[in-house]
Length: 349
Image (cartoon, rainbow, N blue to C red):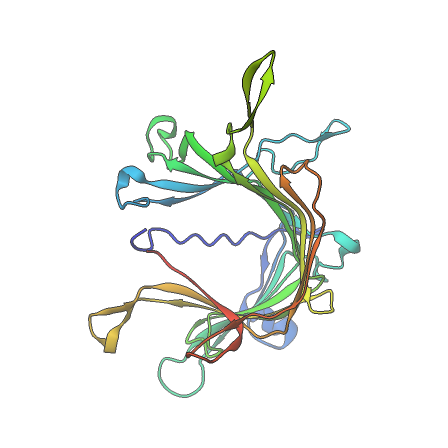
């Protein structure tokens, strides 16, 4: 993509054992009941399902529309019947998100909402354009299931099978799977969002502890270049016969757990900022294109435990587990200087 053709931020959240609707209180109502103006919002959703997500690159690798392709998230089509009940929630869905009910609701908010938001408008300090909106968010732990992720040739909006719709889709005859899927389990955490002047120094600030840490389950990485490949030859009735594969090779990992060193929870301290194009000396020469920057500030070393690594297929014997203790990342703001943390930037070409 030569520019931001699309920036897809999928903010998928789900839950609530009890609440099934969104409720909001206006300033007057809230002020009368709590003594402080502002808006409180409790979001209760039992589950979110998404059939398919496509992120289109409108000019492909060589910069022509004919090479437009798309990253696809869709159901993996794998049936897992137990007692006559389908247990694979992403068989026909690309993304399914619900509550992390593990350990008797330990990872849910006390309100049992998906999220609780407290919103305040503030004039800011000093003079000038200092006004901002502050959104303090508490989010329950989530159980996120993602189906198959692959790449396809982009379809044509409103044409063919998409006629009469806004859908574009992809070419099912030109599709390769990349990931067979994964699941993520998160604990409850807090975030603070400021829009406007953002005196906290970033639009989104995460300075919280994810209870129970982060766990990624059932991660499968596919190699379609080996699908149907010959890996040798054997003699059958005196005739050399090739030995070929029937499926893509897969690196399958049962579980990856991430937590603070020598702990079970995961500390998070990150700033998320959105930058427009930046110009040299305030002139017309583009110095850095528009981008999102995520700065992970130092929260101490981390432990990682990778369980059940299978090479070739998920049914192959595991080579065992891998444990990494006390890993610390650094980034440099100047040659020879190292700051604990990490910086990630996301932009178009």
